[in-house]
Each structure stands twice: as structure tokens, then as C-alpha cells.
Amino acid sequence: AFYPTSGGQPYDTGTLGAARVTDVSVDEAGEVWHLVDAPLAVGETVHGEIDWTRRFDHMQQHAGEHLLANAAKRLLGGHTIGLHLGAEISTIDMTLPAGKTHASDEEIRALEDDVNGWIQNDAPIRCWFPDAEELKALPLRKPPAVDEHIRIVQIGPHEFCACGGTHPASAGQIGLFKIVDARPSRGKL
Image (tube, rainbow, N blue to C red; front, side, top):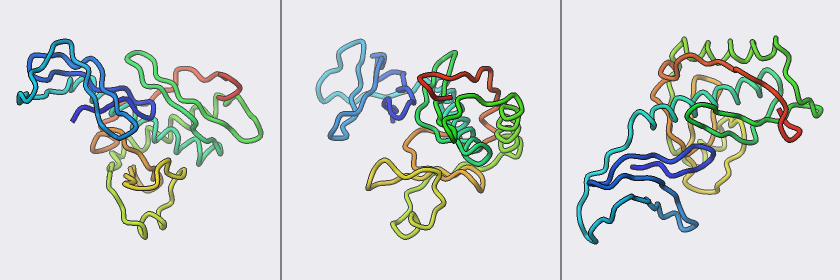
């Protein structure tokens, strides 16, 4: 139930019994590991509780990133190459066509308007594991990074992306979307 750090989305915190969960990671075998601030007895049954405020903030930011990446692709021909969700600042790295490293004020406003339009329309967010035939027919924004157990996230009629992250039930739950800065970093936007 605790989300491990993955794909730019931070881990969940919360409690397992009386112990605070301070980190969650996944190893190469797919095992999820919880770092806690106090020992737990072997074989003890514990109640886990996720810090919902933190989780929901990450869900909102992550779904907003989906919509921004989709708008950047449709409107600017951009491709997302990374993201970082933080408590105060979140960033997204993308490439633009022809080595462009700046977006104009008009392009930034168009991206914000596009994303906020889907939020205001409260587009549904659907997550599912399609079979191989259905997967081939989906208009994915980018190819999946894995070969099996591919989970698709769909937001509205345009955004289809393989993703294992956490998301709210609809775009309206994201809240207002605003780009506060856009500048090149390491030769990318």
C-alpha cells in the first residue's frame, strides 16, 4: 500500500504499527522495502496508515505532469524526459523540436490553458492493465518502459501513458495548474 520512490514520484510516508515509515523503495526483484524508525517484531501483524496529505499532493502533482506532458507533445512537439515532485517545487524536463530550449510566454499560456481546461472539465482518470491486443491499439504518448504488467493511465480523450504512479480519480481533483518558471537546464527546457 505504501508507494515506493519510482519514476520521479517520491515514496509514501506514514506508520506501520507504532513505527514511522521514513522511506519506501523497491529492489531489482520487485520487493518493496519499508524503512521505519523503530523495530517491528518478526511475524507481528501491524496496521499501516499512509500520510494521506502527502500522498494526495503527489497524486495531484503527478496527474498534472501527465496533462502538461501531453499538452507539450500536442501543442509544441515536446517530449518529457524527467520529472521531480517536491513539497515546494516540482520540475519537469523536456526536449523540444529542433533543439529549442525556451518556450515563449504565449506557448506557456497555451500549455496552462490546455491543462486547466481538462481540470475544469473534470476529465476522468482511468488506470488499468490492458491485454496485448488492446495495448497495441492505444495511442500511447510514449512507449512503455517495461515489457509485461503494463498499466495504462488515461486522462480524458488524449492522454494515454504507461505509468505505475498514483493518481486521483479525476482531473478536477488536481486543482489549479500554473507554470511559475520555464528555463533551460542541461540543454533542455
